[in-house]
Amino acid sequence: MPTDEPKQILLSPPHLSGAERHFVEEAFRTNWIAPLGPNVDAFEREMAARLSSDGAEMHCCATSSGTAAIHLGLIALGVQPGDLVLCSSFTFVATANPIRQLGAEPVFIDSDDASWNMSPAALRRALHALAAEGKRPRAIVTVDLYGQGCDYGAITPICEEWGVPVLEDAAEALGATVHGRPCGTFGAVAAFSYNGNTIITTSGGGMLAAGDARVAERARFLATQARDPAPHYEHSVAGFNYRMSNICAGVGRGQLLVLDERVARRREIFAQYQRALGGYDGVEFMPEPAWSRSTHWLTALTIDPTRAGTSRDALLTTLAAQKIEARPTWKPMHQQPLFSGCRMFAHDESRAPVCERLFRDGLCLPSGSSMSDADVARVIEACERELARARPNTPAANASAARTV
Image (cartoon, rainbow, N blue to C red; front, side, top):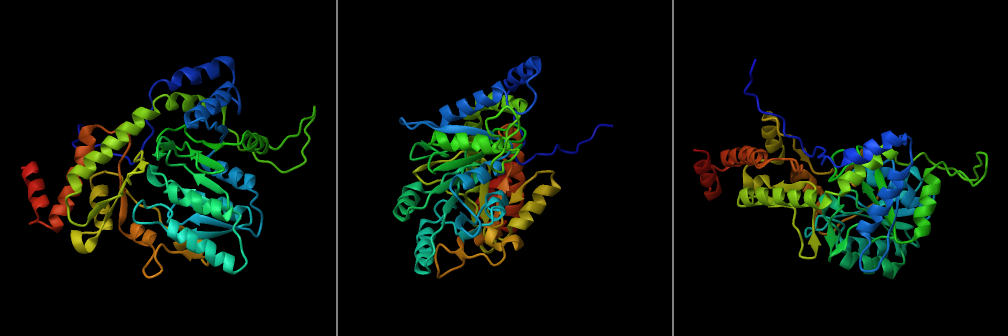
């Protein structure tokens, strides 16, 4: 029987171009379906070429996940049991898990209001406080959140001053830039994700990137069970089964061809949301500083309940009732039971951490590049109805009512 029930609008589904088929079919035709193969080698070269700029050459190692890339990157930076690793608190748990898995201890750093990313002020305060205790972190893990790079113009000099290397978690920021330079090129090592909901996907996979070819080569060695050169299976160190399959890499090669189109569409979707909803009192979108060009992998915003008259959770409930998938922003790591007891340095010691507010009031709207303008309009209308219901006599609400008459 026909139904008038609306289709589900997902948060960020995969968006295939059709170009992937050529590379995947070539893998089947040549029987390269196991891990490694020509697609993996080519995908690494093509990613490295994408990241290389201004004469700085990058080197890549394709992995089974972004988490695996972070794990290998921390090993490359020499992280060992008992070490301290400074890490953005406002992130997905995959950023911090490998720190603990290596026996190290995370020290969490707050966000700033200007970018929602790691606060340079909190980072500097943490380094001074640890130094006063005679402690020095082994590494710093920055996170390029929701497709936007950190303030590396401020963070990089701090890290260089203290001599602490950076691992850049660029899992969400492929295609983004800071001061015109690609995200994923600011740390000694970087990690990308090609999960099913990222801006491009391999169905599951990741990439380690480094400016030093030796780091990428060592990562390949460790990711392939650390097999020593020998006619038999010889192992002198413990390795991992972290390499990407030739089929997944074929999907990635096809996706990489349309990365610029995917970025452009997500930025366009963000702009549509911002134009329609940015006039409501209490609605604040994730800012994009002048030095940043975000991919807007996900459109993120906050709802101040005292000004908007409604809450983040109320809006999520309204959207879910209309089969629109939206999600809260990341719950900060220092608030997670898993990391109970870990230290946290706030952006401003005189007030609550910025990232706690961003989680309490924040949500992500559907942002997939395959969304039609009609899909975006449907999400906007659902948001407007909830916001207008809460503040029925505001100019923005009256404009919304006029549009829906």
